[in-house]
Amino acid sequence: MTTATQTAPAIHTAHIFKLLAIAAVSFLTLVDLFATQAILPSLAVAYDVSPGVMGSAVNLCTLGMAAAGLAVALLNRRIDRRLGVALSLACLTIPTLLLAFMPDLTWFAGLRLLQGVFMSAAFTLTITYIAETATADFIAAALAAYVTGNVASNLFGRLMSAAIADHLGLPANFVIFAGLNLLGALLAFFLLKGRMMTKPSETAVRLADVFAQPSLNASFAIGFLILFVFIGTFTYVNFVLTRAPISLSTMQLGFVYFVFVPSIIATPFAGLASNRFGARRVIALSLLVALFGLSASLVPDLNFILVALVFLAAGTFFAQAAATGYVSRSSGAARGAAGGIYLASYYSGGLIGSIVIGQVFDQLGWTAVVIVLGLALVAGCALAVFLRAPDSKLTSER
Image 1: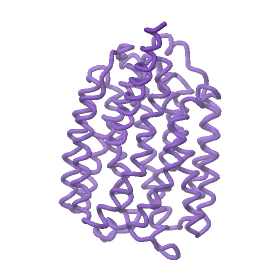
Image 2: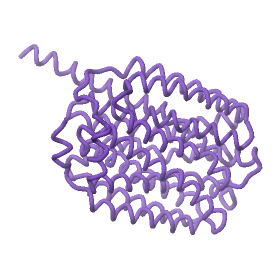
Image 3: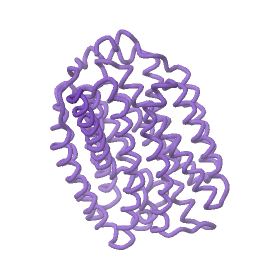
Image 4: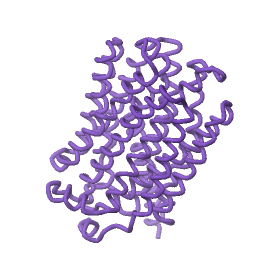
């Protein structure tokens, strides 16, 4: 009895430490993706281009993320998880540092593309690491912790970027974030440890199994639509907020991203909600919450837009956490391949969203943007109907 009493707190503490480590690595993996969006208006002025052109250049990293997601899906069984994450984040420091020299727009876009490759490789391998080292009852919490770190990077990355650019200039912003990338590499190398609970999958065989599952294909499409809406909203709402009648400064724009605080609080519960109510129901309801928020952004008032962004962020992040967990649980031994395909689809949605919504915003304005994004959320809700319980052919191989 005494031994059990002494062991339980140790196990609980170990789990908490691992969740914090996972969240920290997630934060430092994706902080570059979102931080640059906070300084989009400043970058558009510096490069003397339209919002649509600058938004597409900044979000070109999602093309690199999609490509790297597919590459990891094909090669994941040959890559050491911990070492792969650490090396990807170490390599990420190079393009981030080069951005500090403010190259011409073509080189800027190319460096953002390269950032995306390394961010996605680290992201995909970390999710695979979680799936292969976490116990069945811990995996939902671990994946939710990873997405929570992702949410936190949205808030604090944007705040840091806006503050640094406002006080020290754009070049200093990229130098400091390169340092954060290096810190992420060190944390991944020293903190991502654990015994392998399952063996890496034989990818060449598993890809066919993955694409044979309609429910997994539906989850890939949902991932596409989630980032399509998120990037489309949070890239171009910056210009709505910095133009009349709201006219926020760069520093004030940074404070807008406190709208992510409710998401940081809510997202860790996505795994619990999915286990209790099912991923299909959770994803559909989350996207409806996002749709409600999106509609409120049509009112040209700061308070309405802030409330809109709170609901949209909470809804999309909760849906993303539920969808990520669903893919991991439903793909069994093919989780490495399925995770890579999901992230490739997810980041493709971000790229297409930045390009398409950029053109809609430049040509037709914010109201048209809201209509297009609203249709995407409705489509996501419809696709959630196709999510089913994990297929026995895949999950039996856990």
